[in-house]
Image 1: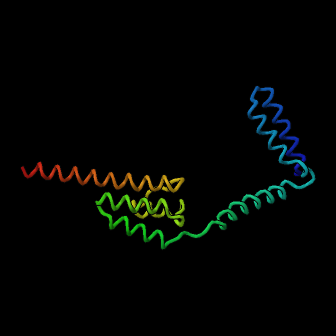
Image 2: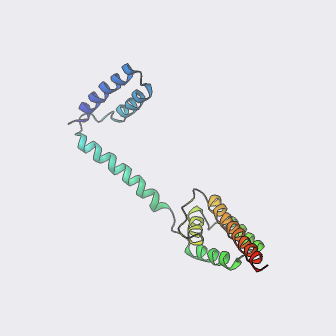
Image 3: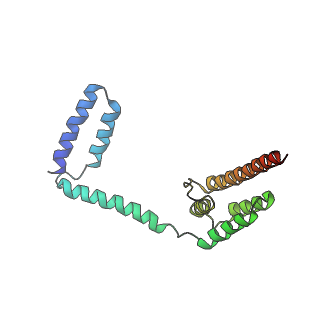
Length: 156
């Protein structure tokens, strides 16, 4: 099958959508037909192989351009967070350093988050990952305070 034959089928489909009043679906088909411009004589298999190669090449090239994780920075900040323990001011200092460190990008912040809160899902940004770390710290402190309160109530 040649691309022209696919274009003809898609044009018929567009007409059916238009007749049914499905304008957005018809527009999507028009966009697809426009992508086929200039490829009428190609076999559809070759055209699809070229499209797949472009998509895969784009995906992998974007990943390969990104720098590897800075494991030294990740380990440093993870250790500092763990050493801060329940000390709110030290914890805040570590978070401030993470925010200001240009070596800590969103990927590093997510790695710190994942290791600090084992198995936590990745966040879209550096600031969102830092916020999740802070929420976890606050949650731990709240839970420890509740435990202390319940222990003191039991000893009474």
